[in-house]
Image 1 (cartoon, rainbow, N blue to C red):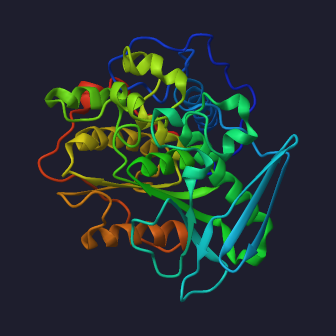
Image 2 (cartoon, one colour; image 1 turned 90 degrees about the vertical axis):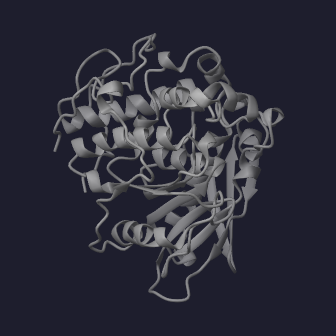
Length: 377
């Protein structure tokens, strides 16, 4: 797998105003200053630029490692303690160990509760993301343990706070071998609103080798522009509706959500591109129009072009069920999940080259994509 963690020198600076009107899905292979991406080094710079743009305009800035991070393990309780200046917070994810397989185990960090089948030989780390960044309704802005540490970040979206918490879990796993968890084999997952959060966590921490957003809808694997288009029947959630529901996004995103998302210099195909070339398995559900299944399919089909540019199209898989209860998991999708677990958590040979919509969903690339995918590998 290509390693894209090292930042090259001389990355271009983001222009003062990187926004402009563009109703199509923006070009992931062109810097904000207009320069094309021609090499892997260019692409690494572009990933960092896109990450910064997402944080500046949609998510809020994710702080780095705090002044002090420590942890302890007792039974299955993993205590994480973080300190910034004179403020200290703690939170306690729980680890459920597998009944078989050798230690140290790969692990899946589950937002809220696990809603996919627990794979054999994999530990499950249950993470109460709500206590890190509250998500009750609009009144939750700036509430949670993250904001106790960072009172200057109250404009941040809750999902950035959750992503910060995931990174602190990994920090502790890296320094606490008594957990019997392999910190180099970590996946994240969540469903619905927590699926959005899992995707953001995977996008903002390159130590996560597999990201599994389940039925995440608009603000997750769906693209803002496509969701606006899909909402012709008034049933698909759009940016203007989502910012009135909760505080998942930064307050500065309201400016775009309440006017037009077409001025954003990115869309969520580029959020998937921040995960590339690491593993990304998108689990979707055709049965709920408000999730925007067409938007999600088109968005991830476009995001897969980024993986193709890196020579790893089979590292982004897409599995859509015809219909099932929201956040349940049909057994017939389990082989696809297992294939990604085998490849990215166990380094086994597995066929992950599937990209399967359901029903009669199609996506017209020519209508939405006016750029060419380069070969960077």
